[in-house]
Length: 75
Image (cartoon, helix red, strand yellow):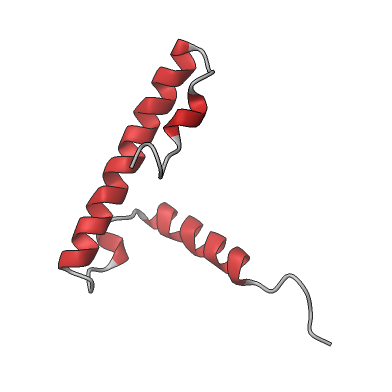
């Protein structure tokens, strides 16, 4: 998860302090992704509110809406 999902190898040329900070954040992200993957397989009907806070859900919804919006108009 850290190697492919978080692309931790891309940080190889950073300073040791920046690398430690990035690893700390990426470890939490990787753990949450793994947890969501396992729970999604076991209980696919699980509500998103179980895993995400209200702020996280609003952010994800806004991001998804932005990504889904058409970038051009059909004419």
